Length: 358
Image 1 (spheres, rainbow, N blue to C red):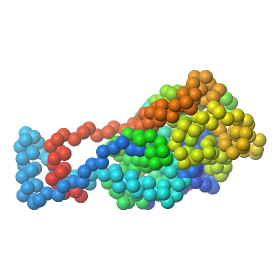
Image 2 (image 1 turned 135 degrees about the vertical axis):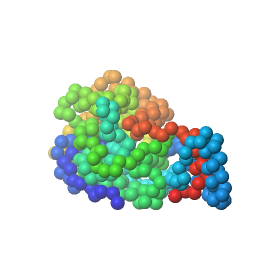
Image 3 (image 1 turned 135 degrees about the horizontal axis):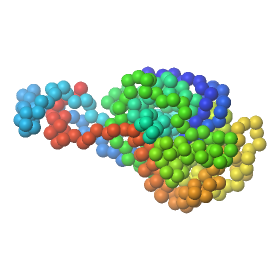
Image 4 (image 1 turned 180 degrees about the vertical axis):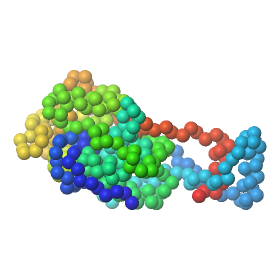
């Protein structure tokens, strides 16, 4: 089973979520989007069972000869991964608890956003967010709920790795909530232990104490991930879903009126509403005239910097353009640091088709 939630005093930036309640005390404020609660892929066909052992070994012998005497393993191949039933079970989690939709997007983001192009560490590869040290990071508050829910899916479909499952859950939820279909491919491996967990300093914070420092901070973090300003703004648009909770991040409220709809509403609201500093005992955040919606200091940085604001205006005016840019950036986010296997030679594919699945 997945590791238990560990209390922590930090909160994160891109949670894309409506975070499930966490009992941790809030210390430094981060750009936390907590979870309130896609896939273009071709599922592998189930392996065909051989009609007899004779046919099986005839096939192996013939392929060995055809391959010029290459030695082939007699071990049966692993069960192929059929994505369709896995996606169905992921959607079932969302149907049972809508709050899990944005939470699973947040899980995919946080498991992937730990990547550093400087040394190649972190990222979705390894699925290390399931281990106690990383799951217990303050910026991962509440994510144990998604990890627990997906553990049930993993037990039902052991053929998929945790690393692939967490990303698949995110892209499936984006599509399920009305967003774009995001290309997905299998091939992420699972780490064997928590030794590969990353330090607690990889995700961006919501406020660095000044407008200039906050803007520079989020740019620095996304640059470390290998992203441009345009990529960064596109990814932040996922604040369209979810909300913040005081008992998790210290912040309070949703960004939009449609927390379960993956649309360009974040950009529309950011540009179209009048935002003023919220008068309360909590951390610095902004509210609209109704007092129902909120923006974080790092959100407001997108308006104050002309180089960033132009992308906000582009995406507010053209949802399809945002979908296109977001999809590309999200694929990059979730594939950073992953070495995907080369396509199988035809003879290996044929061999897999005649050998029994494990």
